Image (tube, rainbow, N blue to C red; front, side, top):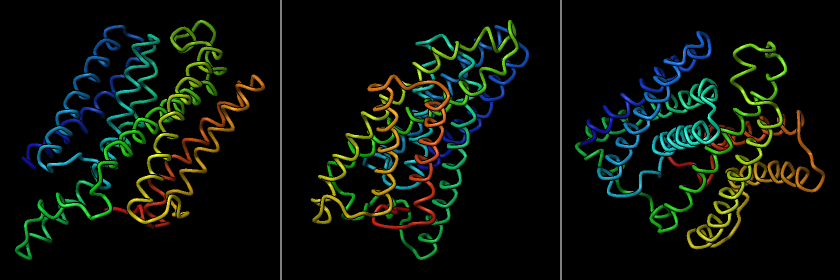
Length: 289
């Protein structure tokens, strides 16, 4: 089953590359047939990725969100899902040309973690130990009913922030569109981009707030303290505060436009540092392989 899961993930990874190419071709050649093909391939790749995650769930006999590979592949999956929903909801296929590369990069990162997992399994097997069984069995701190809720909510939050990041980039590039050109006619006006980005941030902020709250309860059960100023906790709080400032200024002072878009970009940079940078540079209680 491990082999089947790995094959499905590899197909999904290649599929995200194909999807990105198709969206780029659609944006460059302006052919409606490429739009339909890109959207359909995107859906097919997403379903393949979903099947890989379900197989992983069955193989691990637990929710597959406990190590770097599992979180990375779930992060890519969430961004693919939310970007497809926004494309369908706002009839905005050009969004795929900007969201798919981000999804592809996350899937590539997951692929690197998958290679590390293979090396770990091989090392255990060389010692006569069942490598898959070692990965299946979690450390005591992760054997909690809170795991599924905590990680699921943060994945949705990160996916929503990823879409907001893409929309913010589009907002900043919108003025460069040639009047009457493809980009001008197929990308919503800045006001609509701003509103869609705001909705995406609101969705992400709601789930991130739940994530931090549940994380505190879980931390008290596992480590005896609601908050330890662990690097991951600290940077999650920094990210939350950045988006909180964004929402506060928007709601209380009607803040929008270019500065809000810049905040959308900065916020996602913090998201990625919280996820990748902290694990690499600032290991702590949340550093799980």
